[in-house]
Length: 396
Image (cartoon, rainbow, N blue to C red; front, side, top):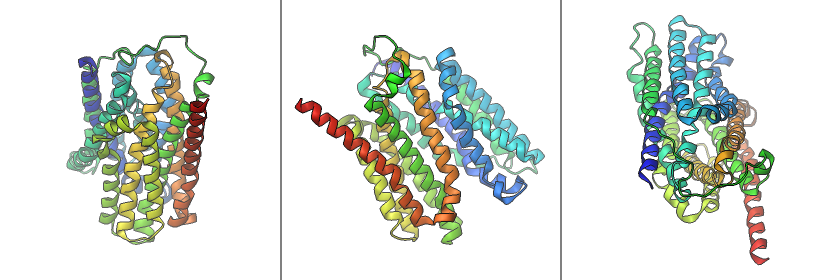
């Protein structure tokens, strides 16, 4: 890997760790704050939903902004805006203003749309055969955030006297400022050093119609939608329906988050060795295994094994899908191609997350997991169709 590419990936990984640490705070505390400030219990999860909605709504605008002003300035500007949003949430807690809390959460979610583009920026900083490794390194930044973010949030919760958790979001603002400072060291390189991707810019429809593009986007949609659908429903099923303790429920969710990001220590190299389709298949098998475990019982270890298997499967499928996606467009086409992917993937995640609550109450845990087989089956069919087409082409 060229020195400039190595430096860019390192800067993006540190920025990812700092930014994601701030975002973890809303994930950890959003429901608690909603329960305290919402005018009715039904709205308690709205701050978390606003974060996901902000992400989904900003995916395409984020790509277009980066195309116009460049990744570096867009990343820095978004981090600074997120710092303002963190301060707004802290103010909302002090003033006990639920609408202001939701507005700040929406802006924090919009920063996620830029933060998630760190992986594409890293992928473009290295030669094509190093893409999966660069993506997994940036995701390791999120692993660090999963370990550090909640600790920082709880350590600062009493920073503002008389207003519990306001200090946590002062910490979010400071982490976002630190992200912006870190990103000043980021120097974008020409996309994919050593790769000749010259040629005219194709219409977006021509890019989207490619079989590999469709498969890559579908892998992203399925990995995020299934993961969010099952993960969001887990605390309700465990704690409310099956009466496991809140500490046991937190342990399962923390284990799931670690399982999502810890495989980044090896998944990039593994996928570079076995290929993106094999990586997707491995992730798919693990997600199917999650459904099998989840539907076999309601004991603590059923939940734990199911969520850990789900997390590892998500990592393999998502890294493989991102790696395949980067092979389907030329440098000048990347922003539009990435925007469509991000909107499809994170729009699906938002829908799955919002549907999980009603689904667990209406369907129950077992049926909810069986419902996840539909998108998984769709990806199975797509991979089989691609395998069949490749077999025909090799015989031709």
